[in-house]
Length: 114
Length: 111
Image (cartoon, rainbow over all chains, first blue to last red; front, side, top):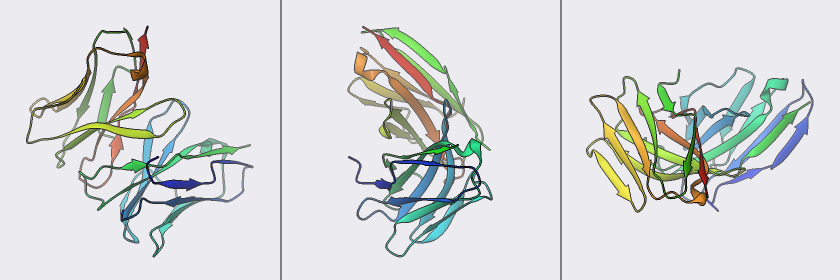
């Protein structure tokens, strides 16, 4: 157990809908990262937050949005959903968000869009 | 976009043999080169990392080597065991901010 929690574990929904994925970092970690892992794909970096502020943005679609709250948990919103959004979404956290800080991954949320 | 290329995409070895996975990167301001292991259905976990002030780092049966001149770094697993079967990802933050992973190598260790 990495100490990073993600909810829900599984989510099945339809195209056009909106979903919110939630992540709670390890105690003491200030930085949160979001990744998308599609079938047979690698890990695609979406976005990083540090202490409530956006620090880096990767391949995140305009239909997706995220934020980190004062209590440091983070949410990733996806809307409107498309079939291609079906994937495993990982959240990771690190102490300071610097490049050399180890990232600890949560168990992931498996999103299925029908 | 991504600046990390990883090879091979799949690798099968006999138990006890060695496995080598290589990643190349382009221009970079970062000095951090980690490797992650992802077992089937599980989360990625850091197994070893190296910083550019050293050329090699070992941890029991795994090692990472770095060639900054050629811009590549490699993961070496010796005396492979069935539990080493997993997908391995290299990663590199090109500017120190965005964190890019390689496309992954699926390693199968045949008993």
